Image (cartoon, rainbow, N blue to C red; front, side, top):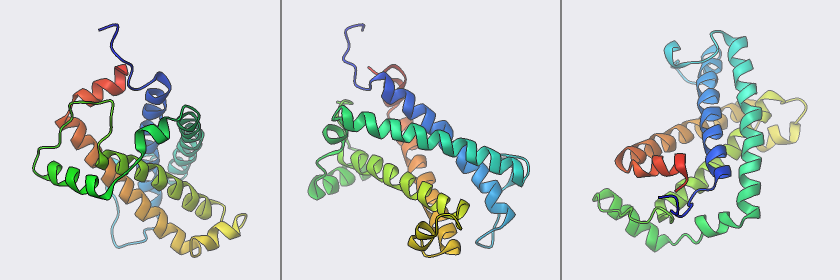
Length: 197
């Protein structure tokens, strides 16, 4: 087993787990912040929020935000520098994506070679990267609305930036839920993200 091929290098595993913790902290603290001024006619249960009170939630949210931003930049930089980004995420073929999606629905999507992402995985991981960028930008437009008027207007104004932030958060939670389901169905992928081989 010592000679097994490294599929996920140490830096990828480290940034993955740091991002995972940062996203959990941001989502849970974000739910607490949302509850202080709801956009829609519901609140999140207090048991799944983080921070205890609005000030505490804001502290957690900004703490996790800086970690997510720094770690995300490291992740993207190393993926681009090692050419892993192009190798792992491209190309995406609409036809192959459709075939893989149909195979997944039928429960026949193969996971024999974990060194290659299937088409839905490629799309999901690219979506997560883009979605986190939208989350950070909309979050900055909310947090620094006066200092970043161009970004605020790009989001359609302060109130719309809150909606963009909420929708992007909801999309991220949905993709992560599917990701966790897939990990439960193919537990070897969890071991791979821990050991790298």
